[in-house]
Every structure is written in structure tokens, then in C-alpha cells.
Image 1 (tube, rainbow, N blue to C red):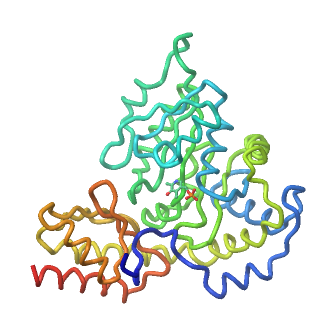
Image 2 (cartoon, protein in one colour):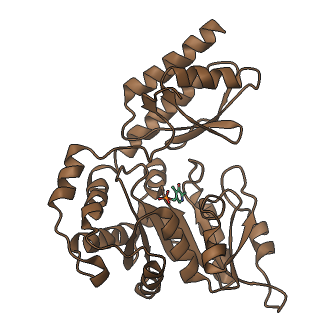
Image 3 (cartoon, protein in one colour):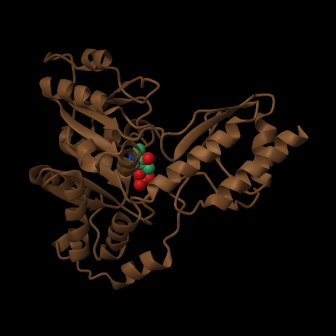
Length: 340
Ligand SMILES: *Cc1c(COP(=O)(O)O)cnc(C)c1O
């Protein structure tokens, strides 16, 4: 495999810079399983405050955060509604089913990432001994780099509440959604009972997510976190990176979005590349089948790292992608089409 010089595969590939590492080195710590790590407590309080919830819990990953949310909302034999493309359903190894005995009820996502209201209604089971009890609606924002329309979020969560369902937001990239839509994370989180926020995506921390909700909900989730092995000791070392990221790396997400847009527009100029212009830091590109494989090989040989899955390429901008990386990718693409 060719060496990757400019890494567009994911916003998880960022490395902590010197200032973030200094914050980690200096963090006061304690045993967080005993509730004695003040840096973890500060991070939990900060994310709770930024999302307008009363309590938060630091966890090692977004996958564990979603799992604990699903297991806290749903008992064994109950079900949650989520999109076919939802990370919590499709990309988390079926954890809720395996570890929580929770049945997923997936619904086809609309092109904008939403779950059509009539399909949600149709999927909610009546109280009947034949059915699993429907407990939860789980949405994701951003999803595939797209921001869910806020009016949709309000309608879908109102529908869920009327049917007696709880609501969870996989807000792994909620700050991308907030920056792109010029709303606060608090506004985007307001309609949901619980929210999961990733620190290790565009925010650039090395590890960690925070699950937020009511104090009672978080107390339940804390017991489950211990059960799945997510109780961490002097975790302030990594929580400090999350705090640093929230202080320093939220507003700069706008730069990632602008760079993604310049890159997508540049690539879209070439016949043979079908590019959907990004709303945030992620976009997908489909190359004409006649050139797809050669184009992918050419870009890889030029040191441009892209994830190619499911018949398309996914391009992601992040903290460690600067203007020179965008130029390098556009130059490499231009050389390919000049030679073709
Ligand atoms: C990355 C991601 C997760 C999971 O986070 P990990 O820390 O990789 O486990 C969950 N949901 C969404 C939408 C994500 O992008």
C-alpha cells in the first residue's frame, strides 16, 4: 500500500498537538471509578452544559456511549427504531442485540438522512403480546456528513414523545452540525432525552465520548458502563484532551467545512466524478465505473488517502488537513484527468 501523505480517510486520524498534550500532562487526576477524578468530572459537566442536559458520563468510545444509551433506555426484549444507515445500528457490531438483548427496528433513511415520519409511525408496535415493546427513537446528526433539518428533528421527536418513546441522538458530530447550521449544540440537543458526543472525531481528541442525559439516566448508565468494562481510573489524562478540544477546536470546524467544500467543488469539475457537495466535513464521491479503479490507484499512489467502501469514496477533512492538502489532492486529480 502506498504511503498516505494527506489523510482524508476519517476525522479520527488526527494527532494531539503539543498544546493538547501539555493539557493532558498537567491534568489533575484521581480514581474515576471512585468518582475522584476532577478532570473527568469537569469534562462531564462541560459537555452536559454545552448540550443543555443535567448530567454526563465519560466513556472510551462513541460505540460504548451508544450501547450504554440503548441499554439504559431499553430492557431485554424491547426495541429501538433507528436508520438503516445509523452508526448505532449498522456500524457497532450489533452490540445492543448481542449485549443488551435489544431488538433493532431499522427504517430506510431518506436521502437527507431523516427517517420518514410515516415510517416511524408504522414501525411503532401496539401493546400486543406478539410484539417487542417499542421504547426508543434514535436519530443521528450529522449523518453521512449531512445536518438533519431542525424542523424535522422537532417533528420526529414530538411524534416519538406522543407515542411514549424516549429519544436518543447519536451526536458524534453534533458540533459539526451546530457550526454548519449556525445553531448551538444545546439547540440541536434540546428535543432529545439523551445525546452521545464524540471527542475523537473532528474535535481532535485522541480518545473518548460523553453521554449526557438526566441524573437518573446517567446513574443507570454508569452501572452498565462498569458492567461492560468502561470504568476507567486516572482517566483525567484523556479527559483533559477532550476539555482542551471543546475550548479550542469547535469554532475551527468551520475551516474543515470550507476546505471540504473547496475540495468537493474542485473534484466535481472533472467529468467522470460524481460528487455531492458537502454540508460539513464529509462527502462521498462516485467515480465512473470505467475509470473508478484507476482513479483510486492513481490517488493512492499520489499519497492521497481516501476510504473507499461500498462502491464509493468517502472524503473527510479535519484538523490535520490544511490548504496544502486540498491543493495536493486537487493537483493529483487534475494530473489523472490530464493524462486520461
Ligand atoms: C464514530 C462514530 C461513532 C462511534 O464512535 P467510536 O468512538 O468510533 O466508537 C458513533 N456514531 C457516529 C455517527 C460516528 O461517526
